Length: 319
Image: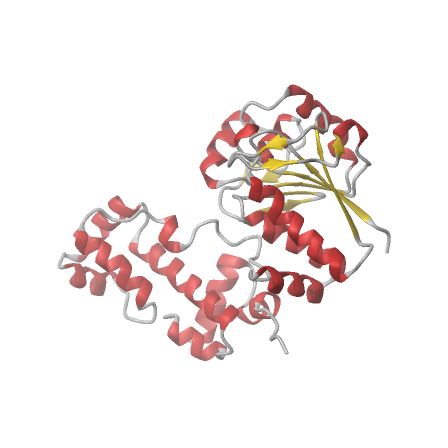
């Protein structure tokens, strides 16, 4: 198998983990399969850059001297807000030549500024999705997934999602076993699916202001298998069902039913990933009642069955 050059673009005020997270994944895969990846870093003039946290990074070379990469990785960070026009120009000219064009976090803004995301579906850090959509209306911005693949271009959400995307690329290149080995070494899951939300259920919804509603949110999280009907939750909050439903949506930004659905799906996914429990047992523990009800929920939200989800995303046991 031919060696694949992974070129990482560096610039001042880059987010350090956007760089080091994916680099560690590819470096781990290279240790497992020597000769597979050649990792190179480059800045505009070849000089060291300083990350947004103050860490100095020394590139291997200047972008003008960089080899044509198989995978071109563009990280994010504060430096994407007012990028050097020379960097945007370089990406416009060289980005289309890469076999895989990858961004982490707000690195998507650099790709968009270079016109490389026009007509494509993309994502970025949840806090910057609206801005990306406003600044670049030709880009189909999806704020929910942790990463998006559209042809040879892949964009990922905030910071650590770059690790998930890099693991997906390693699995594509070298197979699941190698990607699992790298993930275990980095002590991360292999791998959060790309369509997993950037938010947990608790982060996706706002925290209610009033104590009874906050207590209900916590109760739902801790008891996904309980009776979580509006009537039952309203009684717990000591409110009428109609008042409770209105107050819950007003304070959390979502309906009680949608919040319960998210919590149950998240709980079931976690059990599928972390335990050897059977699907029937997990469906009961997560409040679905039957495996078929859980299967329908997974197909609707994730486009895959619980059994397939477990097969793809539960790490193999370490012997």
